[in-house]
Length: 515
Image (tube, rainbow, N blue to C red; front, side, top):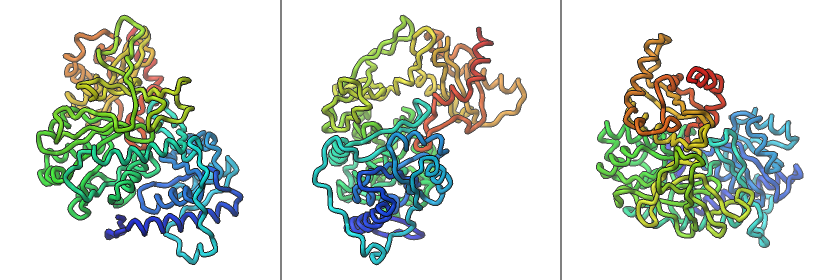
């Protein structure tokens, strides 16, 4: 479905015809610029409209390798992605014209405005539809994605070969019967995010693989409340959200019975790209809302594990999808202090698994270390424990569980704190950066009082921990303006590495004072 003031239905036969029209159009345009099949074409598109899917699929059908970008903040920030893929052309939406032009000039490659409507058949009458390739090897590059940069501070290029794409399709088929959506035979899915992001790219494949329906958002904001309001009209049976949006929805559902009932009537509310507070999941379970957790990875091409849903499971633990071959390796600290809790393991994807990333992202033995941590709660069933990056290494080589501290602050300080992050890599002890829910004045006593209140509320969590594992006092809490923590554009996750970089001077002053 698409929407331009009113809902319009698009059939699968319409879809394939439109893809072929785009394929014929762009093949001709690119040929004229001597950009031939097998070349990489970069896309700067919002990714929230049917026509954005047609651009990517059409160029793939013409034999090119698409490189969809989900972030285009500055040309400097992303130029390494285009250099890494050897991009030969850029197709951009009007809102990205200036940045696309800058990239084009710096790389000396052509750029083209994206089509704003489906071309008429007369426009491509003389352009033949390319033959489908017959000699495709498993290791041929099919597409390029990139990470959000939440771990390293910069996005990382993710090449996907044909075998990787095959694994994506296989997992999309395998998810059909394991997603908790058992109520409806005619499934209608919501649009999660930009189709230039692996989450919605996979989501589109999943819809197509099952012959289901997909509802386009009203606009590029993809507001989750617009999505909820559209359920009665569109017949959505499953919505998929990033954790930040899901928490907002559940917060409102607690207060509004109408929203709560809309969530109860659909098959599932799934989320991926992070975690929601356990109390949110418990509240949903108690109120008959089916929350499905999906573990996914950009490097692996989307979902690798999925839960049964709170309607069917008391713990909602994750299980590997059919075809995913993995193991869980223990992680230990190099210090006698701060060892990881018993049972915490890193997910490692085996080389023969569906979704095993490109060899350039794996270790010499072909294993992919995800950096994501889990604890087995039942045989073959796992709960997430954050990322290896969430356990920052301190000055004495001990590891600090930042996520537990952050979750406790969010839980116990809801009336004081909008969000927070713990930093202090290679420092003697961690520091807590807090976005105060209500902006305080510059009066020092008020800020001091707020820091003391936060510290007092998390005191019970802190008391049995080493200094390297806890916020040692109010002086290690830094108050910053609301909305100032750097976040990823796609998921809204806080970028810990960039916080360390952005507030380096503040941290130096903080640790000098605490010596």
